[in-house]
Length: 425
Image (cartoon, rainbow, N blue to C red; front, side, top):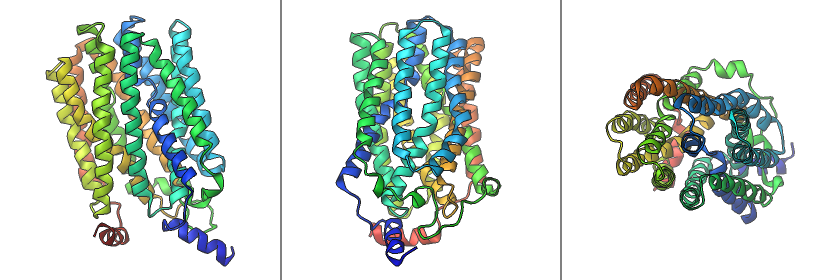
């Protein structure tokens, strides 16, 4: 490596290397439009299957769980692929287009098999998006600027979800639930065009996979990384988080579909809008807290503390206005998770060359937790009712809080705190 190349890599790692306005605009636009694609049709699919196709809670739970399990199965290959390829933009474009095709399949072909096939496609596509976007961000701005960039990504992403939920509510209310799926297709095409603005030569491939800026060493062995105690504790905590959280909003949507038929689409959209608006503010606030030297663990603990309270409120209050209000708590928890999970993964893989692999493992843990939440929760609700279902999710959320509190260490090192203090000042 020449001195000039070393200097360039060092500048990128410390966040001093300039990045073109076109690349920043492309990354911002991608995060905005992918908000609708990354989220898929999630809660809206439960409303569609319940209100239009007249499915029972059990089969709906199977369909929702299948996407989670498909994503889980693809996470490790997706992380390894993002680490190894230089064509990260193409991965984002491909995943977005696969999601668009899956949405068209749901609304165009009747029967259970097409829905399950579409869920498999969407699950596989969503396995690629988080690590690819995080890798592009890290490769563009460097490690030192990553917390601020991830905070910005999440803020823009939640803004996109806010707008998408507003449009979805209007489409579902005035033109039918089918148009929600067409809306996702349009967002996928827009995100693909936005990726063309990002200049591939500005993405430092070495830094994008989590290696040191001046190191040509091969990545650390996967087995060695996974045996580190903070890594497996972190992943286990994420599984518990989503096991207690993922099925709450779909259950609330099913309650509204039964108790307020005809108004479920607009009410569910209002829920998503409220949560996304809160997430925008929280994502910005989390970035400011980290800039002032606040550690990762206390911020993340707040998200874990919110889950049991949300479950209890859902168990006792079923009015649409109450469900909308409860989504404020979801906005806080999800806003924290979206930023801190990526930053902790970056902390744990510094110098290993396995950043995107661990991103895949994080998404795998999300998929496992979310899939089990929808699958087990769906049959608990079918057998015992929604009240018992929410209480079971609450119990898991309490377990998740104490697990993270007692076993997870702080991942921000002393060097990071020393550097954050002058920046905050």
